[in-house]
Image 1: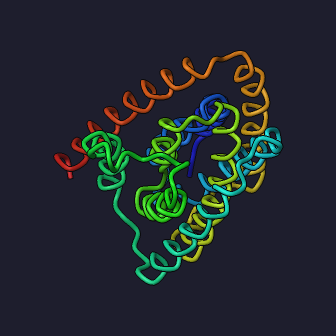
Image 2: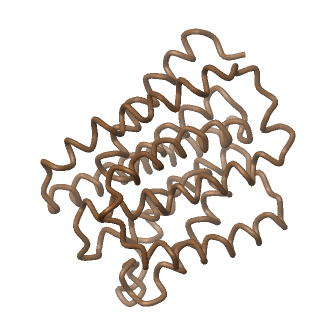
Length: 249
């Protein structure tokens, strides 16, 4: 049972993280999932997280609809669909330590790749690979928006096109997340009332709407610089948390 104080903290977290994601197209989900995992087990946390993020990303996609790069989205969904089917056959739910370690380490692993393998979403075949890779990580680690961001950061796309296109890709990803974890009985083993789900989605829409105004005032250079620092900072925190869980058991 989540108490009033915990519910209030989650509510504030939803509002703040939706704002962050609304500006940068990522990072907010990483923070929110980490907070939800403090109060809930993995499966129910994934479902609640998916519902909140579905609302936030769906609304963000609606706000920037005209700037979506649909040829990227289509190929991304094909790759993500293949990954979903493969993962559903495995039906694996990781423990918390593994989730945190995966969320924290992936960015640094990507930095070690040779330039020839540098992820760029505009390269031929890159959207399919991104969909395949990111969907797998979403179902294993819970959130992979910062990994999807790696495919966009080195492209020449405008910051608004990046946020818009990622929002559509992530909306599909959250639908798949709910479908995947929702089939596990433990995912619904929670006493959260329905009004809290509805309230969380409402806060996500508010945070996303406010962020749209901030994004308009940013430059592409500033957008990429802040995105990088936010992702690195969150990844370090998650690595520390994952190691701590391994040590304490």
